[in-house]
Structures are given as C-alpha cells and as structure tokens.
Image 1 (cartoon, one colour):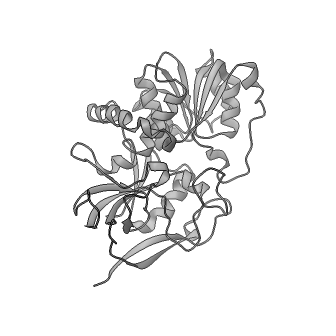
Image 2 (cartoon, rainbow, N blue to C red):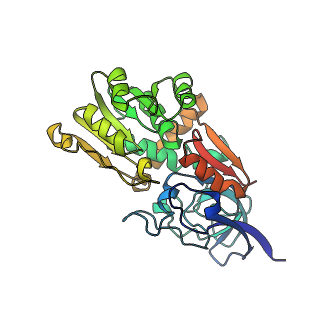
Image 3 (cartoon, rainbow, N blue to C red):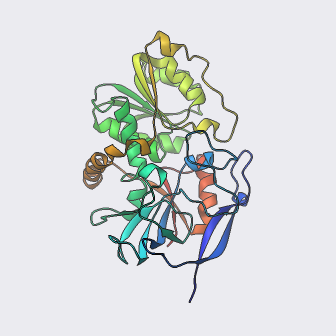
Length: 342
C-alpha cells in the first residue's frame, strides 16, 4: 500500500508581511527509501527567522537558496523517528534530526550535507533530553548563541553585553550563556510581557525597545557604555549599539530582522567602527560546527540543573506552520517557535 503524507509548499513569495495564504499544504505519495537512504516520520519541525529570507526570488549571496515555488521546502530542521532504513547506522525507531521539515514524512540521504552540516541526518540520544530541545538549545539555536559569543570573545566574562531580540530562540539562549559566563547582560525585546519574562525568569536587566527612544533606554541602563552587542536586528539597533559601544567593543551579527519584511535601513554612523576601533563580526552557526560538542556538553548540564530555561511557543499540526512563521516574524512568539506534527 502506498504511504501518503502531507507537505507545505510555497505558493507565492510574500510581499511585505508573511501570510498563510502564501503557502499550501498538499498530499503526496511517500516513496520507499532507496539503498543508502532512510525514511523518517517527522514529529517536530522548526520555525526560524531565517526562513523569511528564503521566501524571495533570490536569497542573499552566500546564504541558503530561496525556496522554489510549488515544491517541498528543503532546508528546514526537523526531529523525527526512523520508519524504514536502507542505510547502515540507522534503524527503525531511532530518533533523528535532519533538514527536511515542514512535511510529515521525509526520505533522507545520510551522506548529504544539509544546512552547512547542522541539518545532516543525525541520530539523537534523548535519554536525558526532550526531543524538541534538538531544534532549540541543543541544536542550531544553541550553537548560534554560543558561537556568537565565542567569536567576539565574550565568554570570558566581566563585560557588559547587550542582546537584542532577547526573547527569541537564539537571543534568549545568548542572554543566559552570557550571564552564566559572568557578564552583565542587558536585554531588549518588543513587548512588556517579554521584558517581564526576561527580568523575572532569566534575571537580567531588560527594556521594551518599542516604548520610548532606543538610545535613551541604553543611556539609562548602560551609562558607561557596552562592550559587546549580540545583534539579531540590524538597522536602528545596530546604529544605537555603535553609539554606545566602548572603545574596542565588538558586535556579533547573526541576523537582521528589521529588514526581513521592509527596505534595509543601514546605520548612519559606521565611521564609529574606525574611531572606536570596533569589530563587527558576522557569523553563522553552521560555520562553527567545531563548537557543537562543546556547546552541547555545557548546555545539557545547564538544562539539567535549571540554569538555562528553554521556553517554547508550540503550534499544533503541520498546517499551522505558515501561521507560526507569520506570528514569529511579527513578534508574537516567545522563545523557540515549533510545530508539533504528532
């Protein structure tokens, strides 16, 4: 009997805000795995800001390719269970992660490198971990947060670190890692509820960047300036950071949410990078796979001890994935945004 599964496809590239109408959910026949391949039934799939960049005719140079119209969306992280295996090292019942999410079933080639290596088919040990953690703190989100602080030498402690988009999947982890490393952490987010969570649950100073002037907030909480800025926003946030960074300050740049659905507005004060001897360091988690084992070792201990909190916003059912993406980009989710496929 032919197995049937559903998958999400892009119907049209959004202009402005993402809408569920930009996608369609279709039923497809699921083929059996060929020699060397594995069939996976997905149980969780990821929703990430970077997906928005791929909903264009052309993705930025050097980034992952744009999603083609009318086809399955490869390059989206998922966790699932092996149903059938024709590849050594994988057996039915194994818990795995891979990069063919936003669908119920996926035929995966273990030898194919996905998402720079982060999404290559991997067996998971979930004895002491929630399966969904491998899409958040123990996966690419944790690696991005850890690597960003690492590449700007902010894990040594003793500095003032500002994290923007601090209630998001990466930002909330960067906040906690920076704090555990001995830094003073300032966090910003886009709602009072998120700010309250950052203050009350994560124990850091926080402000709502939508409430008043961004520069005034930074002047109030960091009158002596900041040493490191963890940037997921770009635009006016990066401009404010350049103003407030101390001499030899550093910026870890992993995203630019401010321009994902609008025209880019670059900072007007870039010369401060010269006058203050600043370092602006762009990075990708997938370019720092050598840090994955170290990150997972630290993170597993922090999660078990409760020193790191992993908060999720979960949408139920594959057909809610477009809705989840729209809500996340609009700032209506907190922590890691996930879809439970069941």
